[in-house]
Image 1 (cartoon, rainbow, N blue to C red):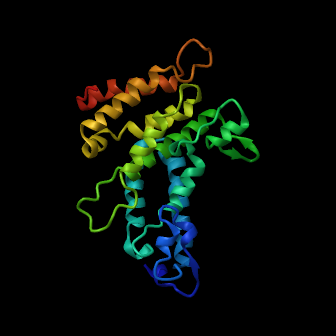
Image 2: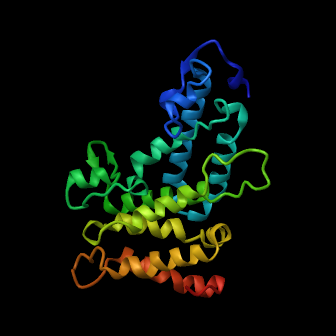
Image 3: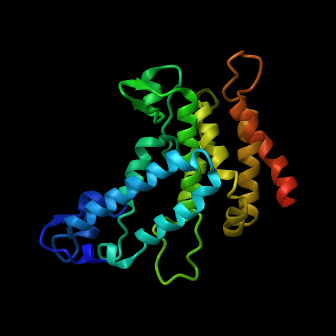
Length: 254
């Protein structure tokens, strides 16, 4: 907590809290925040993203403790500005590496389109498709683990309210057929794979309707085709197979 008491160097926090109108932040004077604490929170956000890309991309169940840690830190009142969380520092990084969560689309058939989809460039060259999908796996599972958290028994306010999960899912499901890519399906699959009990716990029957839309209606329009052009891409088939695993593991029928 020592960094929260470092007031030697203060900065205007307005550019770092995008989810709150600047005029609201500026009520009562110039919104100042400890630069050292912002520096530490930024590095914490970088560490979260690194763990999601490296560890959760291989084991999506590892997302849960990372999600708990993230919301715990960003919900801590001592790290906030007048009750406003600094979690936008994390969302800014998410916006760059996993744009489809924010409704951004692009084709995987061009460098410009791949860049819009968050395709990483390493050493001047694009990573392979598999490495890209692995990154999306980690980021999507992490997003679900961060946003689908129950704060009903916490003294603190959730810095990542559950409507963010619903909104991101709606953005993906609103993607026109001709703009859907394997990236969309990889992200959708890993948002939902381990999240169903919590999702239904928050939204009830409405969640079941949304899951039906995601796994049945959304892929029915065609979506991306396999490399051979003989059928749907494997990422589409994976999303369509989710209800079968939920039926087996959770006794859930959509």
